[in-house]
Image 1 (cartoon, one colour):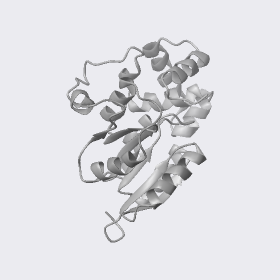
Image 2: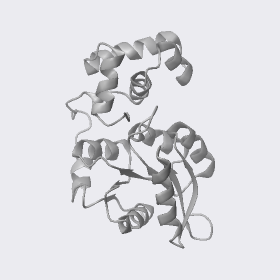
Image 3: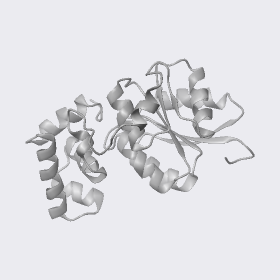
Length: 221
């Protein structure tokens, strides 16, 4: 906790109106300090590394990098930051993926506004939080899940963190060369990741990868 006992918060959402609404709600609480926000998850991660907020409020469906895939990256650059997903997706698959990726809380954007403060305060003191609108008692179920054998029907759970990054980039239409440049890997490595993705996800083209990303809520339309 920084700034004389206040809880510092960073907002990551590609919709400017949503970020403005969250900032307005949180700024009305004397104990909260919104220290930054960004529409781009990759740029947000770079800022989070510098700012080290107590809590990150994170959307799931964003261009280039989904919130779920951003979770381990945020933990890497700012290990003490707690992460609350704030999303329109209320299905168990998303909750499952987010919590097993390392999210501390999961909040529906359709929740009562008062739940926003409750979620932030809960994760900040070390307690998990899942919006009652999403699912009561789901955290204990998910954290007892066998991550070694459990797989989603789409095969996304079988992907490595790097493969998920590549998947997100390919789904937005980037070429192997662009993926290699974006991730700082060789062209051969990018091609190998693509081959593994297509095999695991049973997708034979970039358009199929895009449709899968949209269907899974990892890419906005």
